[in-house]
Length: 411
Image (cartoon, rainbow, N blue to C red; front, side, top):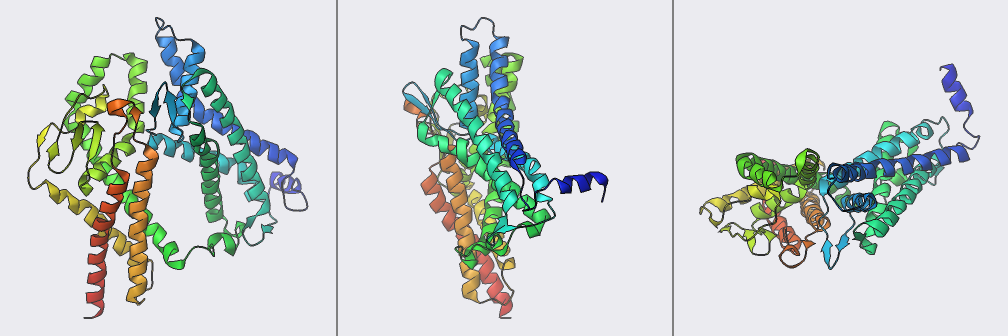
């Protein structure tokens, strides 16, 4: 042990918990994490204002717009006049959570390295819980300041949706940080944290296969979206050029479209599932064909299918969710003992299918469906119908794997 490690160990209080200084440090780290995350949106908004000297908008308005966009990227909805913007860029939300979890880990790392471990009941190391709680409070306090700026100078957030950016994002980030720290040092958590008594065993075993299935289907859909953009890059670049955003505006516009890539992937998931999607009212795509209408000047919309009927063999794309369902079924079988009862295997696989379909449906609901009023008020995929369709299709794939497993055991 080095001299510095001995000194650091000596600064820990005798009850195994950090002192007031450590709590303040963690709270400050949380506030800085929120400020850094918001700056990713506020600074480009200010740069666009600087790059457009002919603009009549004040810098405070640009600051408010940046704050509102950050809140939107963290899950809030915005009111712009009589219109509501509910489309949450899911990739930006995921990045915010990832940055937050990294910052929370750094803030609690010293506490997690304490030599004396004292659990709260049978759950978690008490000083670690206090450090992460202080970090969450600091993040929430800074987020409230950005909320105030948004109300004063930008598009107003919808009050009830502020729960996610103010509390949900820091709490989720702290939970992820806790999970990673416990993975590195298992003695930080007791049995009550690792195996929640309220969660049925079948559901606990089904969580990982279900989330893997949802991730696989969403990832495949993202690849499809990127492929369509590449194939129709001439139309996409033409629309981008028509907007003439300039260099800085072009970078901001490109990053904004990249941030909604998972949202567009959910449209693709709904399409392969058979429930289709709508870009605007009157412009939709299903297995039978694509209808067009006047679209907003969003360059990525240039990659949408051309209007007209699709080939009759197109419904074969439903094999994609069926194949993912087979993956979910196979992973579910690996989550139980090889000679488990058929009822156990069926229960775990069914719960995993429910987790996969439900996760994608919840993501679609979180992603929102409104960019304004009139024709822009209902866009995207129908979350409820898509979830039901995925339940059937994923269930078919999982059932095929279970049937194959049963036949193999009876040979």
